[in-house]
Structure formats: C-alpha cells, structure tokens
Image 1 (cartoon, helix red, strand yellow):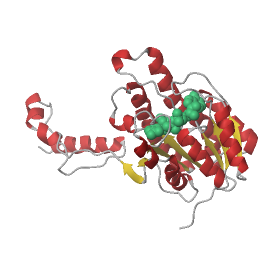
Image 2 (cartoon, rainbow, N blue to C red):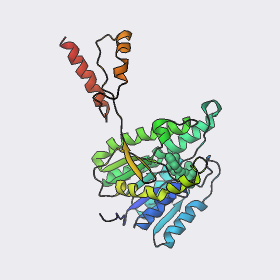
Image 3 (cartoon, protein in one colour):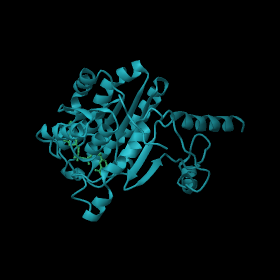
Image 4 (cartoon, rainbow, N blue to C red):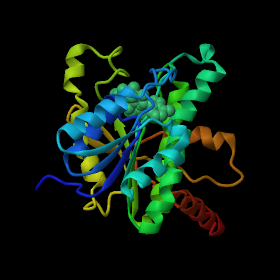
Length: 303
Ligand code: NAD
C-alpha cells in the first residue's frame, strides 16, 4: 500500500508546539496538508504562555516546503482556533484534539484549581474546539476527528483523579460524537498514546524514552484521518513504541434473576457475575443492556 497523502486537506492540531502534537504537525505538513499549529505554549501545569513553540513548528514545516500557520489561542476558545483555520485556509477536514496539561496529586492534596484546570483543558478544551468544528464538517459532509485519551482515563492511575476523569470524559464524548457524526461522514476516534515528551520524561527511563518516539504514532493518525477511512469510527486505539491495538468493553455473561431481586440471589451468583470466562459479550450501546432487560422480562412472563 502506498503512503497516504493529505494534499489540500486542512488539519487543525491542538497543543502542536511540543511533544506528540509537534510530531503530528510535522507529519501532516510533510504529506501535503495545510496545518494550523495551535499551541499556547504553557508550562506543564498550565501556567504562563509562550508563542514560540507553535512558531518553531510552523517554521520547520515551511522550511521543508509545507504549508502551516501558527495559532496561540487556548483550547478553551475553540471558536477562535477554528475561525483562524477557516480564515487562513477556507476549509477544515481533520481535527486532532491533543493539547493537555498535568496537575498530578493524590486526591487528599488536590485543590479545586488543580481539578478545574485539568478538566477544563482536556475535556472542555476538546469539546470547545470540536463544537466549533462540527457545523463546518456537518455541512460539508466530511470530517475526521481524533481525540486524545490516556491509559489513566481507561484504567485509572494513582495521583491522577483530575486527569483520569478528563480523559475518561473524552472517551464518552468521542463515542457519542462517533454516533452523531456517522450519518454526516464525520468519523471520530480516540487515541490512547504513550510517547516521549515532557509529560513522560520524569517517569520513564531514557532507554524507554528512545523507544517511544512520537513519530511512530503518526501512521495510525494517517490511517484514521485519511479520506480512505470510511469505516473505522468510535474506536479506542492504544499505541506506543510500535504496538497498536484496539480496546473495547467486555461484559461478563452475567445472570438474569427473578424479580424482586433478593440479596441472597446476588450473593449466590456473585462468582458468575464476575466471571469473564463464560459467554462474554462486547456491548457497543445502551440498547445492548435494554435487550438483556427485555429478555429477562420475557423469561419471567413465561414462568
Ligand atoms: P506536552 O506537554 O509535550 O505537549 C502538550 C502541548 O499542549 C504543550 O505544548 C502545551 O503548550 C499545549 N497546551 C496545553 N494547554 C493548552 C491550551 N489550553 N491551549 C493550547 N495548547 C495547550 O504533552 P504530550 O505528552 O505531547 O501530550 C499530548 C497529549 O497526549 C495530551 O493530551 C496528553 O494528555 C496525551 N497523552 C500523552 C501521553 C504521553 O505518553 N506523552 C500519554 C497519554 C496521553
């Protein structure tokens, strides 16, 4: 298969001045896209701002013959970011919501401000930029969106209640958008990356850092956000160091009990409720649970 190109496609990437977003921007800039490099240049904890990071990425893209423009707005002002892309390039095809910060503390030490700024930057920021992009993508009947979650959002990580909650929220947001966007050819997926950046440099040893070069994350972005992807929507993809996989929910076979349910019946069936070695299912929507309820009610009616 030949490498994918993005000629004349307009790509907006948030937090693209450093880290993973920078790798994404340089990639899209190298395959024909017109790239809006958004980054407010803040410190890891969200304090201060600096335009130089976005500027440097734009300069690098341009020096290699690519097309890019810098944007320094916070992702809290998604309408400004999208308006800038439209003013500059006249359209919008791909949105990568990537900007993020950290305020890691155990819950006992977390302040309201630590909670708010992390939830706002990741979850509200993803919402805000997407909300501004959505009507444009809907009206043109085309859009490819990738939102960034984290292992913390899927599994929880000590000291990251704020970050994990935001990243889990991004999963729910994206899975819902995947359902809302399907009819309009707007495909939305979740990336769960691990890559070398200032976020990981304090927790990963140097040999691991060299193995998780963020440039190795760009191929899956290319596949998911290219116009040739007409099918893959609502996926959660874990990617790092050359490993790629898709994550999904799994439901144990469970039990359907007589009504009214007795505590003793739940206790008696506790092992089965928790057992993932039976006839597991992979639910993808609320209807899956309602079907189970319906089946149980029908069973009881026939008794
Ligand atoms: P990074 O700190 O290197 O880069 C994030 C960029 O976002 C920074 O340049 C920062 O200035 C920018 N930014 C922060 N707040 C912003 C705002 N309000 N508006 C605009 N720009 C803003 O971090 P990274 O490691 O490259 O992380 C990128 C994304 O990937 C984040 O969402 C992060 O949570 C997620 N992630 C990273 C890893 C990893 O291994 N690095 C793992 C899981 C998830």
